[in-house]
Amino acid sequence: MDALEILNNHCAHGETDHPFTILLDINMPRMDGHEFLTELRQNQAVANSRVIVLTTSGSEADIGRAYEKHACGYIVKPHGIKEMDNVVQALTTFWDTCKHPKHPVLNIPHVQIHPLH
Image (cartoon, rainbow, N blue to C red):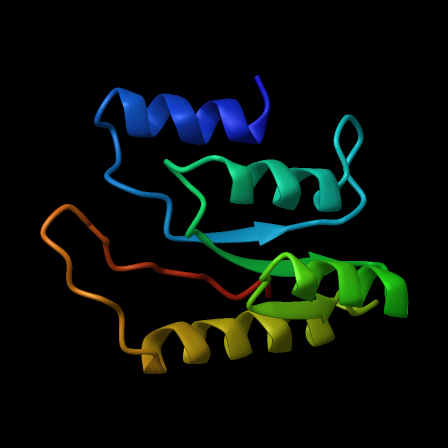
């Protein structure tokens, strides 16, 4: 089962009201991240999901394509565990600082991200 099927099944079966934030890698085996973003944006049930790309590709073409498909952030994976921990902490701070929409059909649980140490 691929990620889009999982998202669709969760929405269809009422297991979640809406996928809220997706961390996406561009370099995936069956469907690359750009294909995923294209299909995600064409699917009304999940089209407005927030996507942050977290990938090894620093290609300007990949960065541009991701933002054209309305990714809300693009992060190139660092090489070390300490640097990756810094990225996780930055994402946690960002998430905790953001104001999230209140909507009667959205059930957005508190997200916890744990450091990698």
